[in-house]
Length: 107
Image 1 (cartoon, rainbow, N blue to C red):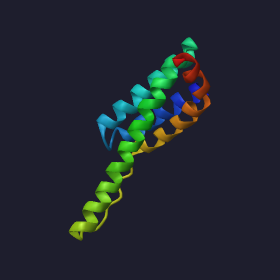
Image 2 (cartoon, one colour):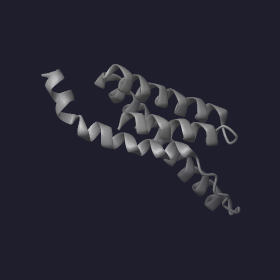
Image 3 (cartoon, rainbow, N blue to C red):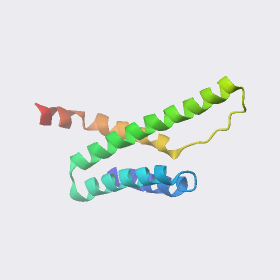
Image 4 (cartoon, rainbow, N blue to C red):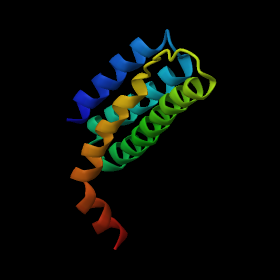
């Protein structure tokens, strides 16, 4: 599953590069974390990648909402600029699946 997530984030990074190189770099870092977690069979890389992906998805969502609010307040036409960082919400599946792992390591 981590390998598939890494491939998804690599593809998203490739397609996002024309829109925003910085977002593309973040997506590539997330893909590298998932890939390293898959190759080394370490859950810590997957957990960190999932947290970064989730935070990045929330930031992308907030940027989209702020853009909409800005156009609504100023009365301008809303131009939807979709950011592929929103796919970071798939990190929730990894966090939910490893919830018992995290709790056992804390206690």
